Image 1 (cartoon, rainbow, N blue to C red):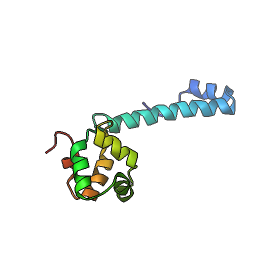
Image 2 (cartoon, rainbow, N blue to C red; image 1 turned 135 degrees about the horizontal axis):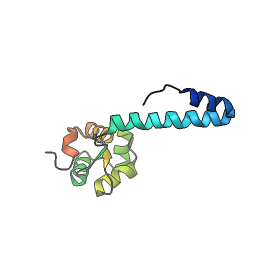
Image 3 (cartoon, helix red, strand yellow; image 1 turned 135 degrees about the vertical axis):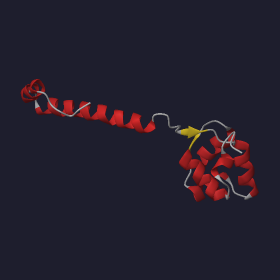
Image 4 (cartoon, rainbow, N blue to C red; image 1 turned 45 degrees about the vertical axis):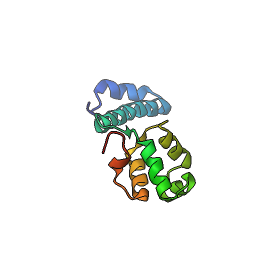
Length: 114
């Protein structure tokens, strides 16, 4: 996928309105962005299942409410609640923030990772 413009495309671009040229460029760059994103995210797992019971156990041991843990980590208390209930997966950065606040390794909060 090159950025080389053929003679036909140049002639076509000259005959287009400025808005048409801008739209064509946006489509071209959007395709490039999608290709780059798929290159970097291809095969990389973006979210992980959290051991909600372990998360809640650690939070209670530290005597933290959902809101208090949320304030310490910058993670919304509603998100923490959903993680504890197993209603959603978490991004790795979220798991890392929670683990740091609870004084454990991130793998301790991940399902199947002991």
